[in-house]
Amino acid sequence: LTRYWMTAEMDNLNEAIEDFTWTIEIRSDHADAHINRAISYYGRNLEGDMDAALADLTQVLERDPKSYRAYYNRGLANIRLDKQEEWVADLEEVLRIAPTFWAAQHALCWGYALDAMPEEALDHCDAAVEQDASGSTRDGRGLVLAQLGRLDEAADDLELYVAWLETQPEVWSELHSRHIYDDLIVGLRAGENPVTLEILEQLR
Image (cartoon, rainbow, N blue to C red; front, side, top):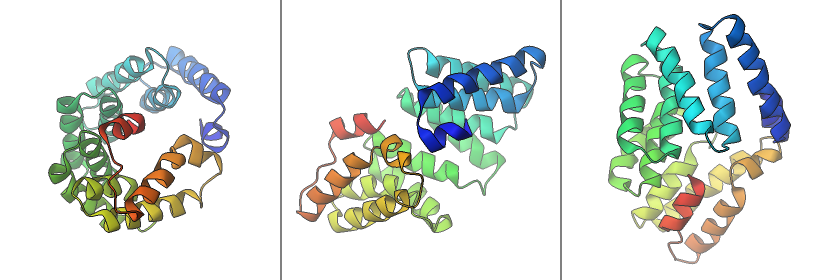
């Protein structure tokens, strides 16, 4: 799984899923194996993979209702599946269990951004950015600021996000759709708002 984040080669995800499955067959209650297999399914994103990810994460939560990592990753899967009620509940539960886990704030920002609900998103976006100096959470807030008509601020955030991508392995630009953000920045700097529903669905 770690090798996939460095290479973006699908074979690594397939092999990761096989390895986690082997572990689970030997020890069915191995929470980390279930969570990491779910992350692998999420990354692969083939037909049926999101359902498989949800099944793994739900199984973890049945055994450990306080597993904020399981709630967090299930929230991400439900964002991709466009199930707002479910991802909001999961991510809010993360913050009840682990209030300082700011990645959940970013996920709430991201989910609301993709659902074109900027007013609901902004506080979560700000909370994530306050905890993250790297720029990795500026993508969601950039989308939200554009939806609010704050175009220059949106471009600033997205430029910080792209600058963060440049500090990561080269394949991350592909994995995180950098070309879309580059185009958005050009449009925002031209005084336009290119953040359309179509773009949001591409990013989902």
